[in-house]
Image (cartoon, rainbow, N blue to C red; front, side, top):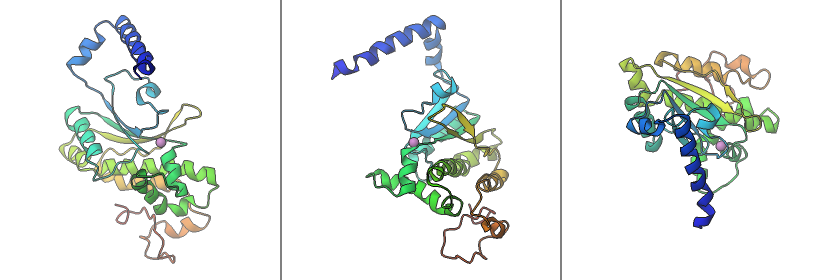
Length: 247
Ligand code: CO
C-alpha cells in the first residue's frame, strides 16, 4: 500500500524543492500567516482544483469543497469555513464555482439514487423543482448544464444571506459573492454575472440572473411582476423571483 503512494511523496519532495528554488523563503513566509483575498466554494470533483484553474499559489485562495458546491444554512462545516474566511482572513471575494458535467447535479436532475448523498443532493433537486418551468422545456443535455448554473446562482444567494455575510455587510466590511461555472471540456471559467456586494442588491441580482433563463414561450409574460398569486397552476412550485417569495 505504501508503495502505491510513494510517487506522491516523491512528487511532493520535488515540488517543495522547486518552489523554494523559484522563490527562496516561500514556505517560511507562508508558515507565518495566510492572507488570501479569495474564498472558493466548489465541487469536490477531482477535475476542478481551485488553485490550478486560477493560477494561484498556496496561500492565495481559501477553499471549501463538497459534493455539488452546495451551501446550506444549517451546514456548520460550510458556515464555519465562510465565517473564518470573512471574519478572520478578511477575504474580499467569495466565489461559488459549479461545473458542467457535475455528477451530483446529474443525479438530482435525473432523480438517480446514489445512496447517502441523495439526502445532500436533495438541495439541488429542490433548485430544479423551484425553477422547473425554466428547465423542463429544454433538450436533456442542456437541462443539466442549466441546472449546474442555476445551482450556483442559488448558492450565491445562500452565501449572501448567511448571517456571516449579512453581519459583515452591516459592519461595512467589503466582501463580494460571485458565481462562476467551470467547463471540464475546455478548462474555462464563466462568470454567471450574479455578483452580490451589499444586502439591498441581493434580491434584484438574484432575480435578474434567474430571468436570463426563459420559461417556455408565453410563460414569462405572465410571471414578470406578480408574486405568483395569479398563477393558474397553483400546485406548481413557483420560481417567482420578484422578491418576497424568493427569500
Ligand atoms: Co461536481
